[in-house]
Image (cartoon, rainbow, N blue to C red; front, side, top):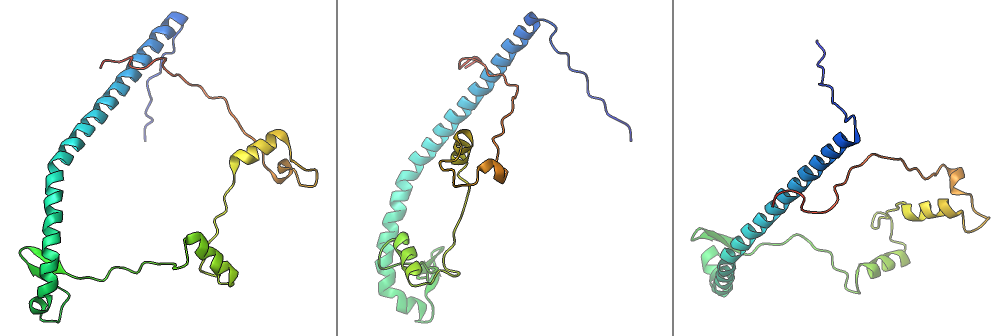
Length: 179
């Protein structure tokens, strides 16, 4: 297997050359941003046009549904022979179906349900606990130290803040590229 060599990149040799490259980078970055903005605007126009076409159709569909439901209710027995919950008619399936079970707690919201399960010792397999690090608080404590001398310092537990220097180039100003 032969090695493939990448062409050597020529770094600028002067501040003038670097300035030219940075100016070109700013233009390229601005052009990318302009194209992204044009794409977003085009998507918005497409969505608006589709919405405008769909609004009357959605209203008509909803009206048809409301008109057909009472008709089916009145004729379901004769249409299905009392043996089915739905039938195919006019290119549609019309009828009733059982939805998947949905959990309802009659005495309040989810927090009330959790409290009731905990109160009666019914947590095993019915509740889950998710524990995650509060990283901003840990970093703050590492910077200031523990609030009390009675706790083990986080550094002794293996925590440490870590930062690195990274090279970056950010073009200044928006709309550097063509519109």
